[in-house]
Length: 156
Ligand SMILES: Cc1cc2nc3c(=O)[nH]c(=O)nc-3n(C[C@H](O)[C@H](O)[C@H](O)COP(=O)(O)O)c2cc1C
Image 1: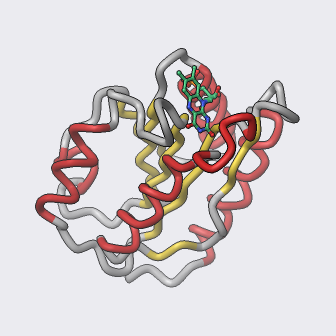
Image 2: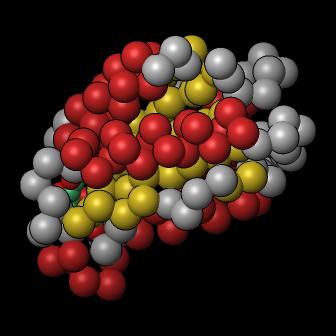
Image 3: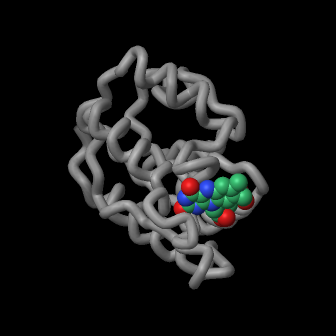
């Protein structure tokens, strides 16, 4: 089974819980999941391996990334280490009550992944707290589908 690197950006803990549920579900399916609560650049780029990267993030402030993901995001944007052929996925938590900035952290991560030349295998998942009080009920099935596509995708 392919290895998956899992990252979570959270202010109040919801995205962390979602990431933990995803980690468990993927491990139950036999995936080798590595979870990085305070990720560094090398955690993200790996040691030259070709593992897929799954980002789970809340949106905070006015459409911003949570503080625990910001240093990594800024380092990646500054250095743009190219990862062609590697698969990425993005799950975003937000609340439509925030209007124009609904799930805007996801837009930042999608743009980042594009700039790093990651290959998406599914459109990103946006979860609205206004209609989905238990985000893991949507996020876990999405992550399992995403991971299945990782196994099916040609490895670059
Ligand atoms: C101070 C604050 C600012 C927020 N700003 C946004 C926002 O701009 N856009 C959005 O879609 N959701 C926004 N949210 C909603 C959160 O993204 C949502 O509640 C999420 O589930 C929180 O996840 P967490 O517990 O992992 O931090 C905000 C929530 C708070 C408390």
